[in-house]
Image 1 (tube, one colour):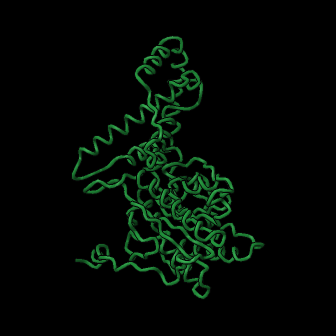
Image 2 (tube, rainbow, N blue to C red):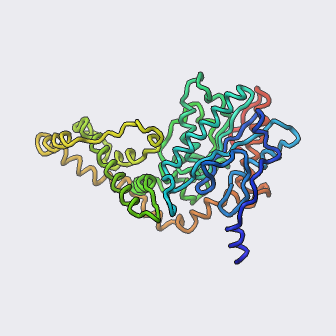
Image 3 (cartoon, helix red, strand yellow):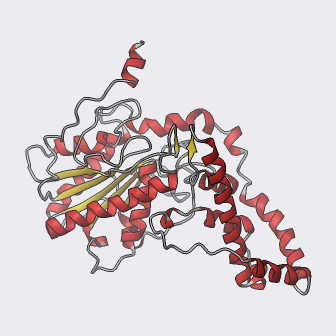
Length: 392
């Protein structure tokens, strides 16, 4: 076996907490960290350090050095790794789908935040850190916390800052921490999001050509496809499961899309909203995964019959005009699709998504700069009248 193969397939040593991690106490700053895909499990010990491998524990390149920075000042920094499946739904046996995994990550993050807040009260403030899929988890958590009332158990005032590294939901044009502005946005969505009171506390780290966070903006079909795939189990030993899931997912999207239209077909026909817009929205069921009672409205046969009668009767002129606009809208929504092929996304995207961690410890990597930002944030939190730094 080659040295590379031996490294990649090495059995991890027993996981141990970092000696400078004060998460068992009530540190002044608690980092809640969500790693990327395949880098966590539902039963992971939140304080355990995993052995570094080619794909493993990247966020540890930020948490560990941040703790070491304050080794002489106990109880300044602590961190917890969020245990969640971190799966794509692809395995020999059935594992959670991408959307199920993300939803579980969001739920577990809120659980850790709530537990720490109830234990430590105002003595501890939080920094939220996520990489790749973990950045999507933290992006969703930030949207929820940022719009909460001050009376909530964990409110916006409890959060010192949020770091999203390679965020697949990065809004297009969001500056990276270094002041550079990659022109694209997250390949899951590049739309503006409402972070409420956390808007000015969010720091993005995005490298040019990292397709996760710097994809072309107008690639709506890819966005829809990813959300469809994110609901499917790709179980190698049970391929029928994949076909069953695909049928159910597509049926659900179509049913919910049509239900949206039949509520008020004339209003929809006169709007600028396209079928693709609705389908993209209805394909994201992440927030409904953990709620078995979440509504799943679908058009009934009677509603569809009524829609057909209207569309072929008095609504026919409006429908014809809408269908013509649909074609132009589809082209516009996907105008940048071929940029994926003619620009170096395919050749550089994966590498750029990993290079945040290149040359860690040299004070030249993205990870080192984020550690510096975290250190400044922790120091500033010690004195209430000191301003919080906007970026590293």
